[in-house]
Length: 194
Figure (cartoon, rainbow, N blue to C red):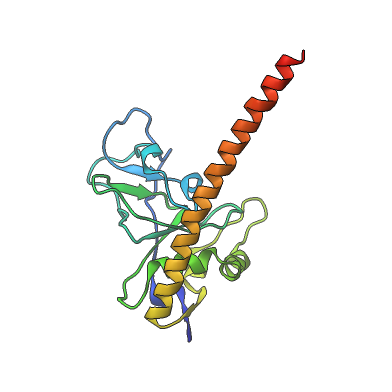
């Protein structure tokens, strides 16, 4: 298995540079914008994204399915693999790295798993600089070492990873439902005995 730099297996670039606020509450069309707060390992809630403060046709680095997003600012280390709805044009800010797979032998889901793995998060954590707000430069992220197994191993890891992320989502829903049921049950008991 080879160890390669992230920039040798993925195109690494930043999102759109905004002069002011990234979102525009007055817009009801155009590009949707993914911000750092929207990036989660289990995916991005595209329906909840605000419209960007960018004129149609003026955005750079429009996102595609298979792209991976990583926050470049803050303490949270989390990568999200995108599966975009067909009808939406989506961009992100320059505080987010966009990784695209330029090579046919690279499975983006494998790369996303590695970036979210204990080893990957540890590697990314070492790249962070800044005492008030931690950040990663694109140059440093590009040099991140990534183990690159043969394609069939990447596929097996990617399938196991997607399965686990799906199971996590189901477990989280069960926990939320359980907490709600417990709250209703306990509140009713409390009211009955007042």
